[in-house]
Amino acid sequence: MKNIFKYILIAAGAVFSSCGNQLDISPEGAPSSKNFWKTREDALKAEAGMYNNYNSEDFYGRGMFWFINASDDMVTGRNKPEGDNIKNFNRTYIGGGYTETQWSMRYAIIRSANDIIVNVPGINMDETLKKHIIGDAYFNAGLVYFQLASNYGNDKSGVPIVSPEADPAVPVARAANVNENYDYIISLLEKAADNLPMFSEMAEADYGKAHKTAAWALLSKVYLYKKDYPNAVKYADMVINSGEHALLSSYADVFKAANNWSSEYIWSVVCTPNGGGTGWGSKLPGVMLTNKAWGIYNGWGYYLPTKELYDSFETGDKRREVTILKTGDKFMFFGAERSFTKDGGATSDYQFNKYMEPFSYANPIPTHVNPNGDNGTTDLNVPLMRYAEVLLIKAEAAIAQSGAGAGDTELNLIRKRAGLAEKSGMSMSDLKRERRNELAGEWPDRHRDLVRWGDAQSTYAKPLHDSQGNVIWPARNFNPSVHDVWAVPQREIDNSAGVIKQNPGW
Image (cartoon, rainbow, N blue to C red):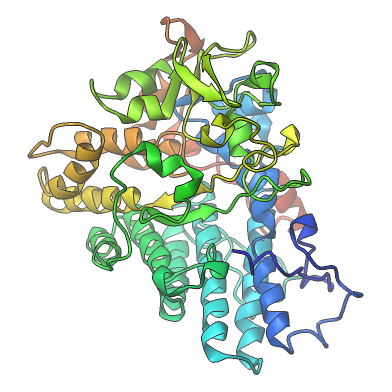
């Protein structure tokens, strides 16, 4: 990832946007598009610019995570009216600050990717590097289109498809349905895979850029959401049989910065604490840390686990303590052993534990933890997709196709690492629990799983509790015909002069 952050994407009309302090050179004036797209360095600058929004608080820090927070796994940890409204499926969240930029930031990446796809092929440069940059653009476009489509699109309407040739000044109407989006995303990811190298073929300086198995893994997930189970299995098998990936033997080791690029890595937000306090990457570790962090660091105290999640783990499941801290649990923080206690104003008396390893060291600032608590990045790359999810995707697709038992091989690999006995004839119910327990507090999105499984309405009709059985979130009214998607940001409707329409019911 070093080379990604070596260059700054220079502002030039609608083509470029500044990458900020995480990059180590400064522009000497802002060139127009006429004198850009000429050299290898121009291509690399453009590639770096696609990652600029990865550093935004609302992109992979907390903004998008408000949608994941809607699930039964967690609650809003502090009084935040807009966050509460999102979790309660209350339309008054529309137009607020937390999620209003989710749409525009992703379309900005699509625009940057489109510019690369159009312009980089004409640059006289090393052909292998050129292919990687173009593949990176196709991958990033496919990734953010999938995030948009899965959050805002359904069988009634998809999200706008802005082709590389489109005039960015002309609003584009929404696709007819989400499957139209999925088909387009598939075409992008196929092109990405054709151009990208295997991760094992990449120089260390390029770690963090897209690679072939990341494209295959995302293709598998898109096909799963599309309910095209044979192709979901096909692409999962391509990842599994690639020889590039394997489960780490210890679940806890997955969430150690030393294993950022382990065999389990598929795709992540590359993070660094940065000694200057500016930091790069996801702020999620600081966001999930207990509010004020016992007076030692500026934790934010959001997204706290529920008793429902804690109780969903089988007895003896090693993942439970790796995932969740409860009152009285011992853990290391800034080099000293502590006994976990909740913040006095916290909604729940649990905390997610997965992202705590960087905080465990004595004097972790600035080597492991950002000096700026308002920018709580660490040296742990926050996983967006890892190999375990690929196994779960294959298992789910296999069970959907062939019934109970078809996913046993993949599910037992995951269960064995968790310290659980192998089982046979596992059903969709088993799959749902394994997916929940394996990926809790991560980006795969428990809420979206419940929606696509048809389980959201019944699940959300029940209140959520703390460890003592106290209700900490009341039952909610989830309407599957409305709340299967999130509201289109009002600013996008306004900016398009009504070309982009709101999802019905919102």
